[in-house]
Length: 183
Ligand SMILES: [Mg+2]
Ligand SMILES: [Zn+2]
Image (tube, rainbow, N blue to C red; front, side, top):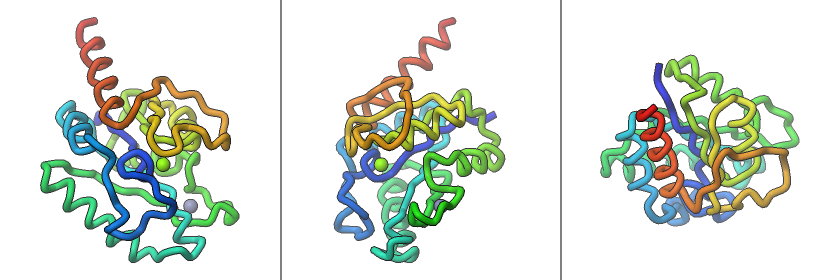
């Protein structure tokens, strides 16, 4: 079975600037490329799960979102990094949809599609919704101190680890993998 890193986007991969949708506003957090390469080389599938309520709120369109995705894929593939899939919730929180994080719907879908062992997989994100999704889906979780750094007070959640940033999170995961290999 495969193992995966379920990655949040804004505030984890790129700098969170409120409703990022323009290519000019998409700035990678330092060492993101190194982090993703490290995780990919360690045998993890890279899957992005992102709440994009800016679409439901009318700040930008689904097309804008896909355009930015293409830009992100190009940036990553230039560096040998492959994202298996990007799942996004386009809904406004008031809509009561079933896919907005902390819902575990997208993890359940990915679990089937890519035959993922969730117990060997991680959720990495900057908000309590990311961590709660990981907790509820029985993944391991890492809260990063970039973006909101978990200070949104929206959900009860408990990260297994706290990291300075995505690169630091990747180092934590590698360290754990090495320890498990020695047992
Ligand atoms: Mg985020
Ligand atoms: Zn949704």
